[in-house]
Length: 98
Image 1 (tube, rainbow, N blue to C red):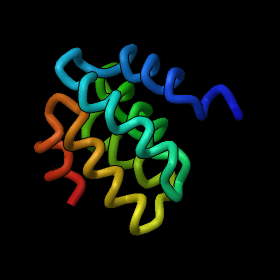
Image 2 (image 1 turned 90 degrees about the vertical axis):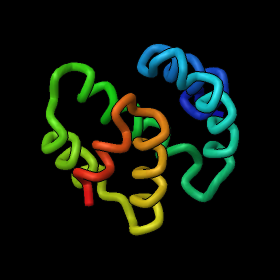
Image 3 (image 1 turned 60 degrees about the vertical axis):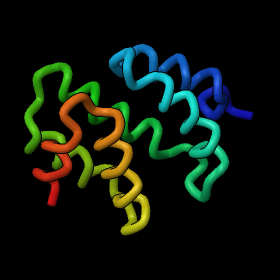
Image 4 (image 1 turned 180 degrees about the vertical axis):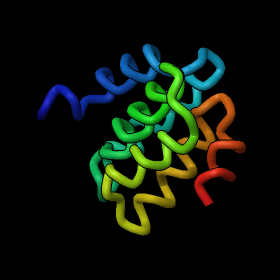
């Protein structure tokens, strides 16, 4: 198995990018996402956007990143749910993405 597809890898990556209050939920979601149809692709996509926002990018920038990630309708919906749950201002971000 690719190291990037292990529960341990994604839990550690989440700890690097997410606020401490988000980690308990992240740690529960990681194994579920790794075993779904997309095999955890949303984990990296979510952290890419959160990292960009934390580095000073705008919601418009985040929307472009999300678009460039080339999600299907289903994975786009998953992404919005993940961003809402794991970004500190997730409600505002998801409202901007509509």
